[in-house]
Image (cartoon, rainbow, N blue to C red):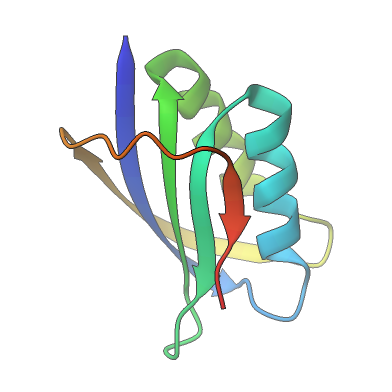
Amino acid sequence: MKARVHLYISGRVQGVYYRVFTQEVANSLGLKGWVRNLPDRRVEAVFEGEKELIEKAISMCKQGPPYANVTHIDIIWENHLENFNDFTIRY
């Protein structure tokens, strides 16, 4: 089943390659969407694809790359699918 999730990731997640890590996770699972840094030091990400694979991505995002320290993730499941072509880092 296709799904979409919007994540707001808190903790030490900027300046530790978190966006690149998230892009690698998405690409390894065949997910589409985007990731970006927010001015309040959180990272925002959108994943689209198979719900089971998105759930794996969320688990991986809770760990993050080696120097990250994820303290919380707001997880918002959404109905609208944009059908992205790939997974990109937004600036």
